[in-house]
Image 1 (tube, helix red, strand yellow):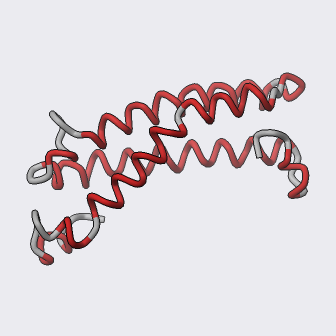
Image 2 (cartoon, rainbow, N blue to C red):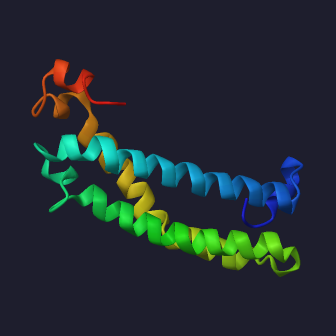
Image 3 (spheres, rainbow, N blue to C red):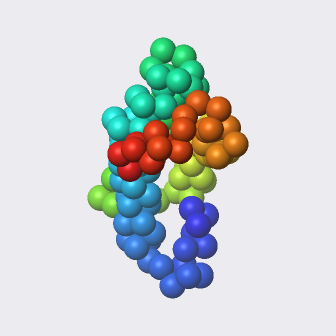
Length: 130
């Protein structure tokens, strides 16, 4: 959509940027909750979620860095719509695409039932505050 094809959906630039702002908010909130409540529990037994060796925390940092650049661009375009540059927006999104999608794939793999039961009982998983 960053290429301007949001118009084909009947969206204005303002609506597209509002959705971009929501994407940033929801992804940031998702990571904040994971890091505060879920990763500390998982990290006690699964090194990939630990604070010291955590691949997932490292991925979150890379994603967050990209989101900060994204947020800055969205704010710029909201305040000065005439400066919207689809190439710049796409480049920004692409800058953290690999780390985001790799993280999602790895997180799904690490949290699969077959893998999770190597570290936790069902009762322990059910007690995780989510």
